[in-house]
Length: 252
Image (cartoon, rainbow, N blue to C red; front, side, top):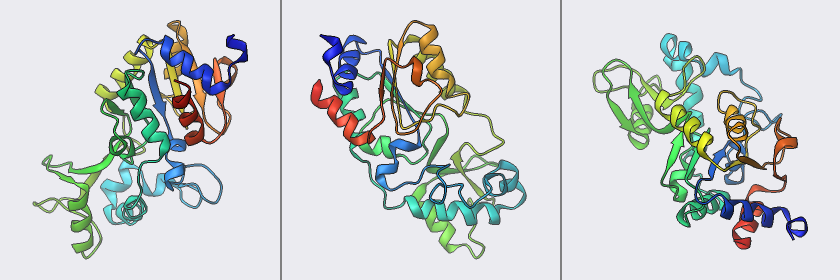
């Protein structure tokens, strides 16, 4: 009987019943087991000792690229040796088995792609590349790092000498229209939205859960902290994201 199923078993059942329409939405919590801090946790969070508006706003980049890159250079350094964890691999395996249609992520770390997800919608962009806002010249991460290290002021620049900007959505910028539009379309078509490692508090992405519910689909949440949708979720798992998703895989 369904009432006798464990949480991971019930989630496995929902994934099978979704008929390949299920979509995953992930946030910072999915990358924490890889050693990447989330944003808001006191002491360890990315913004614990930093005012994001003073270092990660588009106006700061335009006005003072050296201050901007002094922060983002450290951010790049902390991500350089990070690898996908079991949660990334589990989501990739669910996609491979035809149980996940796509993964929508708020993360910029590139670990979903490294972990094997093929249909990935990065609504906040990615650190994998950086671009010149003047001429559109784009460079891969390793080249950006090299240009940053070679620059006297620590600011990587394009061949024409203009500062490069990471291809991530900074404070003060709009989300990429194509990506967020597809994310909303998928959420409306999904019989199941699987939310992993996200607080479901950052809009407009947090609104994906509401879209799925209004369209008649179900929401499953796998994350440690509380979310505004906990009482509306068909399944709510609050353990370690790696252990929970691996248990779901084992139940399929």
